[in-house]
Length: 212
Ligand SMILES: Nc1nc2c(ncn2[C@@H]2O[C@H](COP(=O)(O)OP(=O)(O)OP(=O)(O)O)[C@@H](O)[C@H]2O)c(=O)[nH]1
Ligand SMILES: [Mg+2]
Image (cartoon, rainbow, N blue to C red; front, side):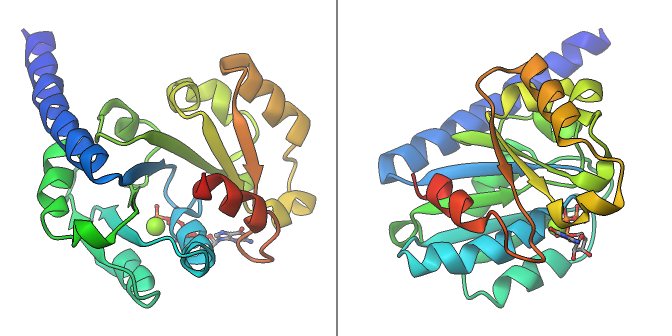
């Protein structure tokens, strides 16, 4: 019985996800879903990337998901892009109905890409399709190099992985070789981007990928 309820929830979610995907496809808008643990650096990645992408002429809107506060939306709003904050209360992920509602708030005719920062969580957001073109995993050096092995689903679904806080590698026992081996054991064609939001190292390569 419990399984049936869960299936219905996911099915309902997928209907909204499909609607969003169709709407954005018709308008030529790309939708990205950033997924990572609390504090992995998701908002910092956006703060670094958005000005660089704006310089290239890309028109971006952002959806921020957090249990509470509008702190991340405030950080993005100063970059002068449309942003909506969704507070989920105790909810550990964003769902497709919420995303569909927010889309009506955006001037879609003037947007090329919508980026969702999901609620900080490496597990639950992975299971809820939001209609995005791709899920992007954001993971930081300080979380440890074994995380792909322990939380494989997101690293299986996300072709693109952003490893943040690489400036901290010298101060930790993080092994880039162990991390890469772990990733490759889950998915062979993974695209790994190394990034420091503190020094800006790796930003240019990431801009090229987002620009695709
Ligand atoms: N040293 C270093 N610190 C970083 C880097 N990226 C982010 N941080 C710091 O890590 C902390 C968390 O960064 P956020 O960008 O807020 O992380 P988040 O994933 O958006 O966090 P939640 O939205 O709460 O899940 C902040 O203090 C950032 O300044 C980095 O590349 N290097
Ligand atoms: Mg954040």
